[in-house]
Length: 317
Image (tube, rainbow, N blue to C red; front, side, top):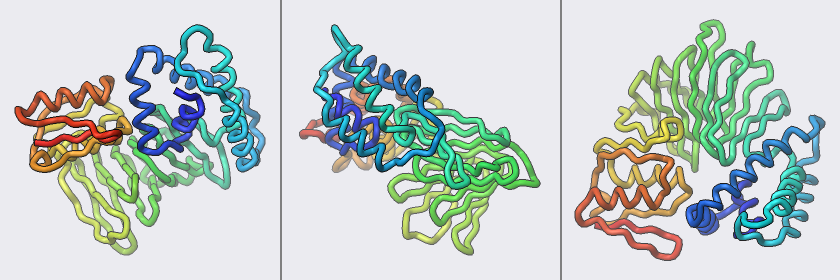
């Protein structure tokens, strides 16, 4: 596996085909996840060396690209990984903080928090706690104790909000506003879809002049371009997989479970034909690979078949 492709993977620049290749590489030997973990550790250490001054992001990115073009392929971490890892560390340092596995920096009145390959918990200045899934991005106001405002740019975030009736906790997601006082809930904002799932308390969701109150066990799903707010019951716990480390399905339509697996593993699994009508009750460990969990799904049904077509996995019945 080329180092440059791994770098692109860390920076979320890979396409579906490249994601599949990296995931397959990670599962091919026990050494490969160790190598990727080494990159994570290198970044964690190199991040401490970065200065706190403002940087020219465009210039840093150009330097990073130029450096990445000089990186030689290195298939696995075997006899002499040190030179390769040092080279990657240099590339990461040139990338500055914007493309970190986990970064926090302040700009324009907000503190920016991003995750890449890691799920991360973050304690906010008011005592609230958030958990960010991989590849998530939020910004919170620098004067957060006085102004509890957050912008959710993209990703999947669980909020456990500290109670403060005098200072509402407000989250902005494009044209949608979520407001609470003290409660716990999950918000997913990916590919034009916004989903709010309430675990405790009451959450107010607003879009223009329309407002809806969500209670425990209720959710709202809003597609881009749709201006209607409607409450739905929460029928599964799949939204919680990145915290529970489990994919819990209870009479869940198979396509919904597969969509979550694709999201979690960066996979490209498609459900076709009569298989779309199947429902499944199972619990799959996140620590297992996509292939292992797919084998469990196949064994659940008598006639469900799995077929591989280049970078696509097809489930048919």
